Image (tube, rainbow, N blue to C red; front, side, top):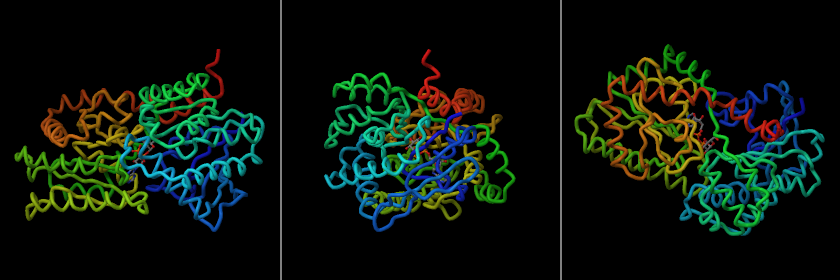
Length: 448
Ligand code: ADQ
């Protein structure tokens, strides 16, 4: 079988395990186990200038090839255009977009540097799969260097309606570059419709049919096993004892403004205000490790959440009950899986999310005999696969409060029926199916 080349902004460090292991590494595990693979991208380190020759090392059948980014490139390409321009635009948040020509130039420079560093390592029959919004122009850069291999692209985040995308300066040129890929994968049908519309609007008709939705999934069986095993762990037992029989609501997110955390905290406050019967009977644990802590908007969000948490606990706490437990540290996956299983409610309310794997992990973690309820934003890509979730508008704290009340008082039979509607697709449309479907399309197995 020919080699698979994965290109992503961040190359996972195979020596790091647990909480820091990126979702992409987990999702690709199966595809990478089956064939020879090369994983190429940024090392996560900075240097004086961006390296030209990647450092290579091998673990099993995977070769890793990484580059350090120059400090200026890191600032322009990563913090600047990727995180301060593209990320908010793709999540429908034009008010947060910061744009500078220098950032865009840095973004293009790094994409070109990545292509130049990878090209000499390529074999003629490699299949190349580039990931996410950091790499819009990467395929076009490889083509400029004469690469004729199959090159696919998957966008992990949403693609907004074209009218929003046009707000990004030089949006047309970016989209035109995207058309260099042989397959352009997105998470949902809505994203596919939006992206096709944008490509058609700039006359890239030939690229329209190369856009398709491939909803990403999780390794459900192994997550279920993790959750089951966690039940006998000391951390889980200690945590369960600390709940003293109260119902648990759990939220697990990177601390990001797309995740709807202030509205969610407010929604929980509304639950306690409007449904006083739940006071001192429910505990909400929010785990939200700091992410992109060097970007101003993320620091502001953290302050806002500190305030919300202080206000809710200040107003409703009792000497023996803290309504909201909020932590900005990561929790190891094996422990987190157990916390999810203990929770009566998984509260997942992003304002916009490409997919949201936490929602699927929550479903996989449940005890089939006595499952909890998933309260899910209608703006997460995962909605299409989770018909049994209680859907909410994440911008409306009252709707969140009402859904929490409904979930807290839901009879077990209804909880089971809803969970069963969700778990079917979580199991069937897993990480393995996602890789297989994308690569089959890219490698032409579906051409007949
Ligand atoms: P993210 O925005 O990071 O991913 P998500 O899909 O929820 O969001 O995946 C996060 C992963 O990290 C999950 O596996 C989760 O368990 C883990 N994680 C999150 N918070 C954690 C915590 N506090 N401690 C430990 N682990 C934690 C992007 C897109 C999503 C898309 C994915 C995959 O924004 O929309 O679903 O990529 O394509």
